[in-house]
Image (tube, rainbow, N blue to C red; front, side, top):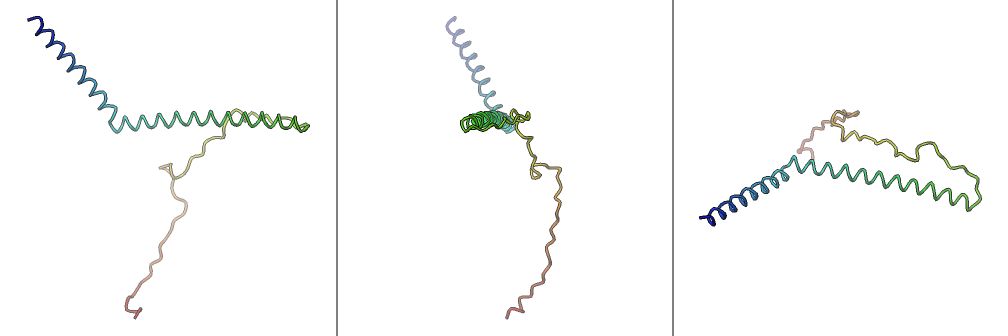
Amino acid sequence: MFRRTFWFTAGAAAGVWATTKVNRKLKQLTPESLAAQAANKAVETGHRLKDFALDVRAGMVQREAELGEALGLDVPPVDNGRDHELPSPRRRAALDPTARPTTTYSIPTISYNRNEDH
């Protein structure tokens, strides 16, 4: 009797565990969840690229100072406060749904008579 109860309980627990696991995976694979995951990855990649660009810029300033010192140039390093920031991002009009096109194109109407070709 105890053995049957044990296996019944173990089977029920395994079924609940498997059902929970499958439901979690199904929720992760919904279009909304996949879109959110992709957006998070894109933001994370953007931050990494920004950090890389700032490191490159700092390295460039350091190397310019080293080269200026090696060549005997008395050029003071330019420090206008922009060494630690990237330019502000530009927004493309194609990505902005509220942007309206500034030019309009009109297609001329040309009548075409096939009988004139013969």
